[in-house]
Each structure stands twice: as structure tokens, then as C-alpha cells.
Length: 201
Image (cartoon, rainbow, N blue to C red; front, side, top):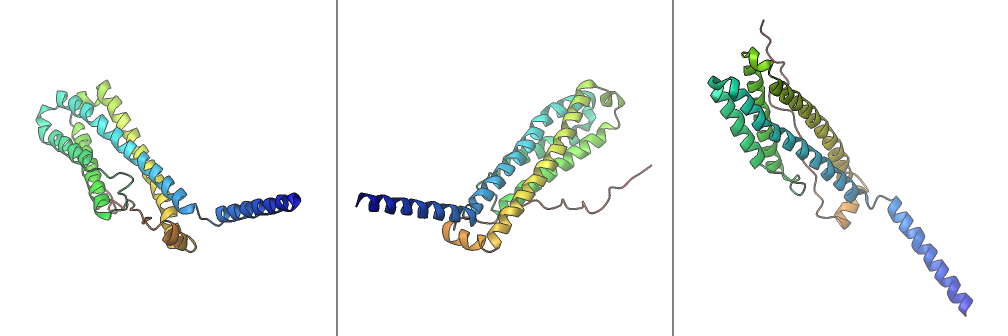
């Protein structure tokens, strides 16, 4: 009797092990795994945008010391930074197209204002040779590169997640086990980025 019970327990244990392995191999955990990867990638995007926002006040103060007459451009950068930091899209709301659009639009406006500020600096040779300005400009350029990489990584992880939600068996698994899972938004090209910048000699 004891041997029979022991054999039944071993069989139940083996069946449980086989079922657990089968469920893990069939992709039952793909949806939450890919969702967490996309959220982590989004956190890195936010981290890099925050880094850029933190550099701007020092950049504006440095330029202000040399180019008081450029008050309008400095004001535009400051206001664009304020708007960009007010629009928050956290990992729980990246499935909302309107909030995501607002976030992207605010960041694009800030990028445009920074571009105008850096173009203005060309008129001030003494500012262009200032060590503080050069260091800030270098950090800003590095941050823009990091933003591009973080956005690329985010787009890639969201593509994998959204594909899992839209294809079989991921679609079925999400519908049954993860009904709250929704496709995430991703970045689009900045309006006008399809045209090359004008060059004047």
C-alpha cells in the first residue's frame, strides 16, 4: 500500500513537472515578459530625456552671460523645457495614444528650441570658446545620442510586445490570461524630418 502511494506521488510529481515545463515552453509568460522589457526600455527613454532637461538650465545661464540680446531664444528654450517636463507618460500610460503624442510633441518642441539656441551661438565666438559652454554642449550632444539609442531600443521592445499581442498563440494567451494587456505606443518621425535642412553659404 505504501509503495503504491509512493508510486502515485512520483507520477503526480512527474506529471506536474511535465505540465509546468510544457506551459513555460508554450509562451504563456511571453506577454508579461515582453511587457516588462518594454517598460524597462521606456524608463531608459525617460531617464535620458530627464538628463537633457537637467542640462538645459546650466546651458541657458551660460549663454545668457554672453548673449543677453538673445532673450527671446532663451525664453523659448526655458518654456519648452517647462512644457516637456510637465507632460509625463509613465510605463502604465504608454498605451494611451493621446498622452504619448503629447509627450512626443513636447520633446520635439524642446529639441527645436535647443536647435535654435545652438544656431544662435554661432554669432558669439567668445561664447563658442567658453569652456563651460563647450562642456555643456558636449554633454548635450552625448545626451541626444543616448536619447536616440534609448528610443531605438524602446521601439524594438515595443515591436516585440505588440507583435506578441497580435499573433497566435500570444493573442489567445493574452486574451485569456492577460486581458488588461494593450498594445503600446511608439515614436514617430518628427514632422519635417523627411526634408533635408537648408544649407546656406
